[in-house]
Structures are given as structure tokens and as C-alpha cells.
Image 1: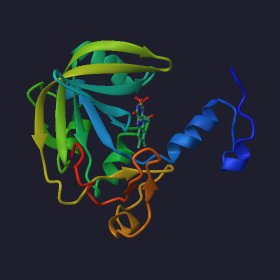
Image 2: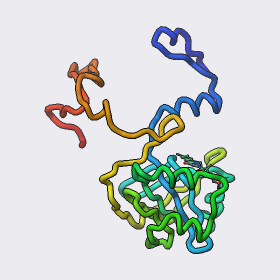
Image 3: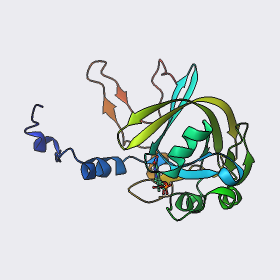
Image 4: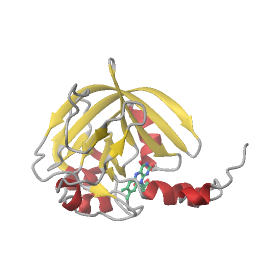
Length: 209
Ligand SMILES: Cc1cc2nc3c(=O)[nH]c(=O)nc-3n(C[C@H](O)[C@H](O)[C@H](O)COP(=O)(O)O)c2cc1C
């Protein structure tokens, strides 16, 4: 492993490649928040997760990463499907509930979710912005987590007007402020093409979006 030297002058503080370092770095990366569910009725299991990823559009594939000791891990393997409800800004309480080790499984969980049942039978979270249902395709080992790759079988759009619930540095900040104000922040010069790309402005030839 080559050693990184002289990085201080670029403003880097190199830390040991250990769990607290990775946790601290990724804490700086804001994510949305979801509740992943499987089973139904008394067999319902639900857990808050932000390690969710849209993997492929053709075919439609989706991934959730679940800790090996989480109740949800065993239950997704048994049921072979899961639903991912993407939480809205006013659903911090639901996120806290389903990330609590003391929470109930089964019917109390169904009552807390309250959003009906998808085509897989998994319960959905009422008031979520959207929900994605998957049939389990493959489980990949991921150290102390398992990666559940699913084939998307249904997409439900809810009310997105409230915007997303955001998780950042261990808390749930409100979205807004600087990111929407425009201005000169984010200016970046491409050293080959020489253009000055600023957030919120389209380049003349357009991008992919
Ligand atoms: C915002 C947030 C995101 C989380 N994301 C994940 C995740 O992607 N995967 C995971 O296994 N646990 C995640 N957790 C932790 C679990 O929700 C929590 O540890 C839960 O209690 C695990 O289930 P268990 O009680 O059955 O062990 C997250 C917690 C929070 C607050």
C-alpha cells in the first residue's frame, strides 16, 4: 500500500482506515431515508435504512444493505421480497421508530406503517414520497452486512410535495437554504475543456439531464 505523504498541504487529514474514520467520512454525505419492509400480518418486519441504491434500469434492479444481525436480514431471505418506502420530510418519527431495537415486529409495525400492502404483500409507509417493491434476486456477502439485490416489480408514487427526509451527521436537518439560492458557489474549471461550470446553469451542449 503506497503511503500518502504531503497531503496536509492540500487540506487533507489522513486517518487510519478503520470503522470510526469511515463512519466520520460518510456522516458528511447526506442521504435520504427509507423504511424497508417484508412479510405481512404477524410476519411483518420493518427497518429504517439509508443504504439503498437504484442499481440498473435495464433490467430494473435495486439494492438494500442490511446488517447481518438485523431481524430484517433473516426475514427477507425467508420471504424473498421487500418494499422500500422513501420517507418524506415530516417522517423523522417513523425513521426513529424503525431504527429502534425496541420496536415491535408484526401487527404493531403494520399499524405504524399504515400505507396498505403492495403487490408483493409487503406493507408500505403511509405519507412516504414513493415506494419500490422488489422480488429478491441474489444475496451478496458484504462483510457485516448482506446486500439484497432485487428485481423491481412495482413503483408507487406518493406525495412528494413535502420533499425528502434527509439524514446527515447523525441527525435530520431541514433541506433548503444555500443549495437553492444560486450564486457563485460551486464554480469549477475543467482543465481540459476550459469552461467554467456553475451549478444551476446548463452548458451549451447540454448534459444527460
Ligand atoms: C437514518 C438511518 C439509516 C440506517 N440505515 C441502515 C441500513 O441501511 N442498513 C442497516 O442494516 N441498518 C441501518 N440503520 C440501522 C437500523 O435501522 C437499526 O440498527 C435497527 O435497529 C436494526 O434492526 P434490528 O433492531 O432488528 O437489529 C439505519 C439507521 C438510521 C437511523
